Every structure is written in C-alpha cells, then in structure tokens.
Image (cartoon, rainbow, N blue to C red; front, side, top):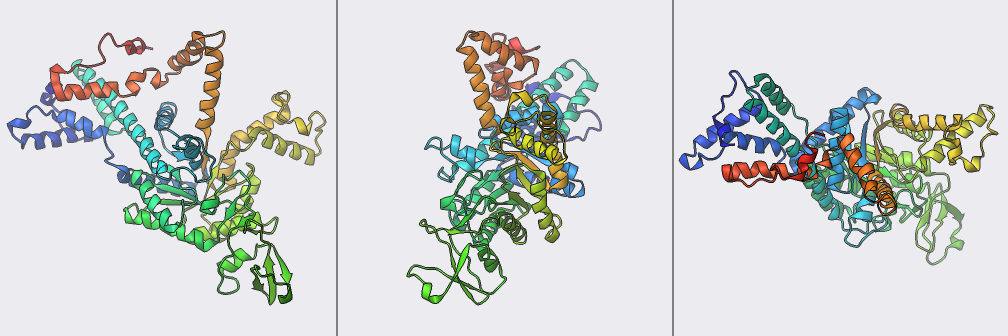
Length: 546
C-alpha cells in the first residue's frame, strides 16, 4: 500500500481525487521524517470515505437537497419525491444500495423515520402503541444510526472503487484508471434527506425545542410535528385523537424553527401534520381576543348548545358569540367535542394557519387514500397559499385493495355499468383479481402517487411502516419453509439463491459488515505486517464471481 504514494499523478490532472492526494502529500511532507510512513493516497481515500463529519454536516447538506426538490416540484409536479420508513440502520442502508443499483441515482428518494416504528420496535419498554410513551431520545439515536449505516455504505462502495483503481493501475491500464477516477470524483452518496417524526413534541414548546435540537444534531433536515395533545397522542389511524388550539401548535412550530436557526441549518424543513379529519375532540377552548381571530375560528367548530344564565351549572365553561351564551359539550374526560362533519374545514384552517406561521410542508392524515378527497382540501388551501405542498402518508393502515375496489365499484355503478358479477361485501376476494374491476383498481393504485402529485399537491409520498411488514412477511415465509419439509432448501432456494441471482449486495455479508474496509485500514496502519481477513480461506470468496 505504501508504494501508492510514489505513483505519478497524470499530467494535467486536477480532479478531486488527485487534489486530495496532493493536499495530503504536502501536509505530510511538512511534518518531517517521523510522518514518512503516512501514505497520502490512503489519507485521501479515508477522507473521501468519510465526507460528512457529523450530523449537522448532514442536516445542512440534505436540507439543501430537499429545498431544491421542492422548487423542482413547484416547476413540474412530475418531480414528486418518495420515501420508505426505516426502523434500523441496516434497513435504510439496504434500501439506498438497492435504489442506486436499480435506478443509478438517489435523486428524489428519501428516508422516513416513523414514531410508530420507534415505539413498536425500538423502545426499552418493549413494543408500545403509537402514543408517545417511548423514550424520546430513541428518536435522535435512530437518526444517528440510520446515517451511520448510510455513511458506511459510502465507505464500502468507494473502497470497492479504490480496489478497482489499484487493479487497473497494476495492470498498466491508463484508460481504465481514468474511468475509475472519474467515478470516484462524481460519486453519489447514499446519504439522503430524512423526514423525522417528532410526534406532538413530547411535551410543551420548550420540550419540543430541546428534542428538535437533538434530532437536527443527529442529521435530520426535516421535522414532522402533529397538532395533537402530547399526553393524549394517538396513532393517526386510530380513534380518540385530541387536537390543540392553533396558538399552542404555532409555538411548537416556532420552537422547531429556532432549533434549526440556532444550529445553523437555515434551510431546515418543518412539516406540520393535522389530525383534525379524524379528531373530534379538543382539550381546551382557544383563547380569543376578538371575533374572527384564530382562537375564535377554532372555537367556532365546537359543538355547543345555547343556554341562558339561569341554566348555568357550577362547573360550566361557556363562550359568548353573537350576543348568545353557548355551552360547549364537555365529556366526562374533560375534553370538548367538535361539531360532527367539520373535519375537512378544520384541516383546511389548520393547514393555512401553519403555512402562515412558519411551516414549509403540510401533512393531512386521512382515513382512506382518495385523490379527490385530498385534492379537494388542497385546492381550498391553495386558494390562499398557491404553492402549498403536501407530504402524504401512503399508509399500511389503509386496506388499499379494498378501498380502491370500492372506489371502482362505485364509479362503475354511477356510470350505469353492470356490476352484478361483483358482491360488494366480497371485494377483497382473490376471485376478483383478474376481473375488470380488479385490474382497474390495481391501475389506480399504481398511478396513485403520480395522480396525487399532479392533482392533489402531493410533493412527497411515503409509506410509514413498509419494512415492519416486509420483515414479518419474509420471516413468516422462511420459518414456514425452514422448519417444515423443505428444511435447509427453504433457505437456500428462497433466500441465498435469489440473493445471488438478483445481485443483492449482502450475500457477501462479511463485506457488507465492513471486513474489507477493515482490511484496508490494517494495510494502511501496519503495511506488510497486516493480518487481513480476505485471504484464500475466507468463505466469502465462494461468492466472488457470482
């Protein structure tokens, strides 16, 4: 390895890789004889393999990517972005490696960090429901873990390029050497934006600010915060959700912005989520100074009954509107009830208010994936804020097959088509998979993201919990086969053989875990005395040419 420092840099070469080597060489030369064993090319390689020096480096870099993507979407809705939720660094790493393998670029592909998955899979209490009961520090810890694995993916892939470069140089193939150096200089990192779920802020605005700082310091460029009450927080697709007045939520939006600004991440993105479509309750009546202000608008949705002063009970809370005394309906839980059927109007008001007070993107939690429903709300929002954009949860909580088959059934019925071949109560049946209804429904599912981006202002499509479900499904299939009649063939035929044939990188699991990177470092540090793992007895060599 030390011989590398003696190679001749091609005349006129000024590319990044050679510049890094020359910078290291000049610095080492200035340190005298005691540094002579430090190889400048090894230094250059290690520097390129560790481009990001910490979470704030990552947050600033990815925030600029996200802002550019938002501008590209404004110019053309076909430029929407996507992500999958990840609950472990390895899952994130394999996702990005797969994206680069299949699409050649990570452009417009993000990661999503779901509070639901942190609660269900990463809490020291064990599996928990999505109610903000997990340790809030587990969220920034997972962000840091995701980026650790993505940075290792960079180091691994660059290390493979460095080995190819050594082989080309040893073979005297100058053209190949130049080709590989160009790949190194134009290398695209696996590090992409993460939209990270801060739930309802895990407390008051100060608690939100403190947690936001930890998440940003870990690398998050985008924070997603919801308008539920922190200590009553529920999963967006479950019942019993309780929202807060706008001023309370705005304070938390500001807390996130101050955290971004304090840490120098000026481009940081705040995603505000409204759960009002499915939330029929509020914990408190909003403070209002005058008719028509934001507090008064919030209170206008309360389900009230008109009373006289004589009707007042000792514990009553009342509001006055248009000269009338109104008593909001209060439950034994001390929560107040909204008027039925006001969810969409409240979502629109929530969204406009958030964007007018520092939010960058919206998230409207819905009960079904329906472009018309989402687009209807977004059109109303865009009448006030024309460039309003949505992050949308393509949730596994939806029964996508059933909901789209129901949509198609209703459309066919409305068009006067004969639907007698279908039983509406059996639309999930596999009997309908190859029917006209089943095929149209699948086409609508396939185009849902494209249609939503074009017609409903959806900038970012994400699936919150996909790897939770894929892990369960693949484990079930493996267990059924391995512990059944197939035994070892159940693993070999359905896992390893497919890994080989589909060129899944982790078939060489020692390489994926960093053993080749470790060998490189051993050679840098110990030279010819290095005891390396990648010798002829390493069984990973069985996969070398497959």
